Length: 475
Image 1: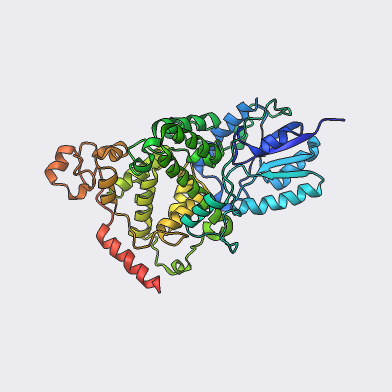
Image 2: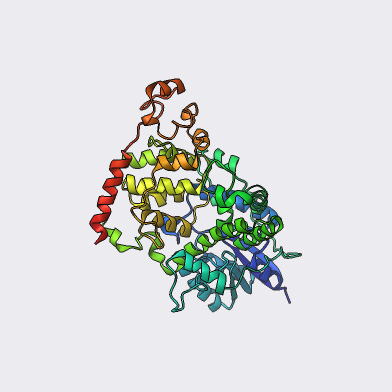
């Protein structure tokens, strides 16, 4: 009798450690590991350019850790998985659950098809600490405000367990695909724009754990206060690793808990864990309110008078607004595929409230340019800053890029890094060049309208315009 063969379908869990699906399959015999690039079912939310670059590197790392035996396919899993199982005589299929609306619909169909074909299908939780149906209100409905969600999850849901170790002695089926199997996925664009990404990131499970160790050693102690200052190295930068599942939230949670207890930094640890919980909250919102991706949760905003001024949108995308903190954030995004969270709030508020562009314009741009583009986090965060989502910032809370810059980048170090044409301005002037004396500008080599743009809008006037527009829909 031939040994049992199980298919392990990798998705947003590109790791060997703390991988429940892989661990479960390892107890059943030989394993055929597979990743399927599905560009059809996600619709407009197929992976963007920066995500595809990351995915290419991450799959290469996973394949190496599996001794080159990872199958790489492209197409619809509804067709490919049943075919793969039949061709190789698989009896079991294992995967870790995903929670995006299109994932949920497709996986439900797929499980029915595979079960009908006589296979045993096992899905596990490999991506969240609390799955969306675990932290609910007493009446069974989902939370729409973070703080009670978090309190309930910590008080009434199962605490994160110890992460699983890498399964020992994995028995992997041979993979006859050639050395060009990854290239055949056609993830990388023809034009070489991604050198900045490669300089700043090391995708893959080893890169994720190196990033986690570095943060625990150098960033955790300063996390509570320092995380708001973009020039400091006080944030974990784990978001892309978490999205692609190169490290699990349980691993990050428990590693921080151990380090915090060791160093007497329990308060900093709790603050970091709270930010991990925001990710969980976003997934809960997306699962229970799948319209979140394209529709305002607060339907009053359906009548909001958004504008469609293409030149202003392009100035924002290129980091040429004349507001240094906004420009620094947008250029950081383009150069590195990442943006500091405090700056994300500022550039988001500026787009939605000062430029009056629909939050979807921002969400789509971030989706294409962020290496950590995550459907739950991205759309929930954009709706939050726009004031139309769950637990949203009040619409009248409009981040002023100048005062935010003065407070959180007081010496201008972040601005100087990403807006080098302003690097010679003194710190007191770098936050608002349009109000700098002509002599100071000249001495720093800054010519407004030539080598650095004048502000594309007036902050005070556009703030009043946004508040007036909000008043019109408020009733």
